[in-house]
Image (cartoon, rainbow, N blue to C red):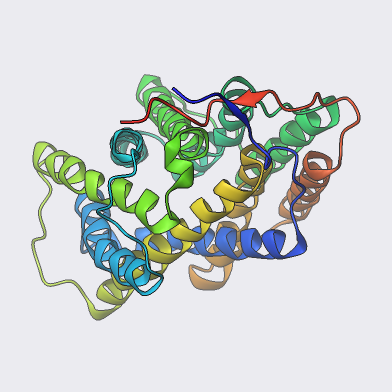
Length: 317
């Protein structure tokens, strides 16, 4: 076993380019929620997730091959890749099943508890430590998301609470996948290979879930649904998820994860223009909270401790 090494990216501030890229990713992911909803009448959720993984896999292989990535080289990453893939697949099972029980608005709020899990795990696994102002920033951003979506809601019964719990479980797995990609040998793999493990492993998991829940495609999907599935497979999973893991390799996981608070806000704006939902002054106040929270999270903190040694190197096989 090699000696632990300090993770130089834990204290690295986000560059202007990284911030711009994260904004683009959040915009894409916010619209992706709308795309999933538009496709649901033609393709049920588990099958939808499985099909987009099937479509994304060749995209990852093509991009990686053009960049000279050696997908099948023995580099000691397969164990971490398999673990990340299992969590990646189960994450979507929990989220989609949670959506069957709870409302979409509550689901969005609980899904974006993920940055808190990342912040906690980053301290334990990666040696990243947030200062008091940065923890306050996380709390302020989450309050902004909750305000934008409009929780709490009346008529919450045990089924809704179970759905909420499933969504929180999905958020925890999302965070855990990020930490595995950052804190194991998977960090040294190319982003295409790191994501390839997850996408490939998720296919049988999602297929089994679709079979267990009795999902099927009963008619030929509309052209719009097919176009949106291509958007999900090629752009969302094949491209933006790869960019996300590239950023995770280079920057603080907790600070990057905090930016995902913007995603549901983009989703609400997209719903306004595409699905003709209404916006209110509450949304404006929520946006201010999210932006203020992100400023606090990414502001250098004088109280944050220096990063501990991260467990980046495991037993070499």
